[in-house]
Image: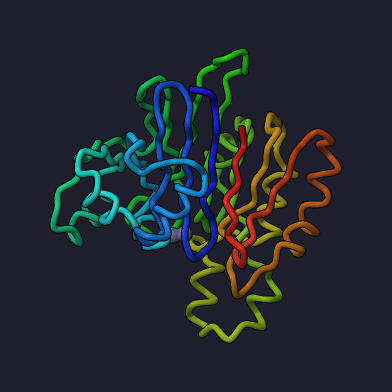
Length: 264
Ligand SMILES: [Zn+2]
Ligand SMILES: [Zn+2]
């Protein structure tokens, strides 16, 4: 299967992507309501019946709200999650998915892909990011797709995985000033800014400019807050990153448009 990475959407309102590579079509998070998820898949020429498995980062609704509907249509779908995340989601479900449990931090193989879960600091039961190693095929080189959203601060493990990514999706959640000026209650502002909240534009930039190694040819900034961020502010924050890596393609996912993006 030729490599393709489809980002159906990534923002505070919903996250979902699909990796086609090796012998697998794997969904990463299912954070859109059923009909929206189906429409978005269809617009990319994908059918939900063709999805083999779903990887879940954590139990927040913007990452798994569409899972139940997906399972009603396709009960045999494999769902990869760690034990705590599976337990939280299962407690809200009537059906029992075909859970494929992994240990946080461990790697496992699935249909030609090697998937590594990456522990991240966020206010969920046991949240993770993922690095998915896709094999070389059809004359194209092997590629590693790494998904790192929903993290309150940058750890050494996060830094390590950001440096090894060929295709990197990184959270750039909020602009400091917009968050300050927003009407959100103080406790929510504190939660977003906290060590287990979300990465600001400047924190994401500092992670990228501080990396000692760099492999990425594709960088997608995602999980933007609709209320407290704008793509132009992310673009501005990332100017230095663009300038240091001339051949890097940078995409900023607009939470107000939510237009799918395919990297192939
Ligand atoms: Zn979250
Ligand atoms: Zn989220």
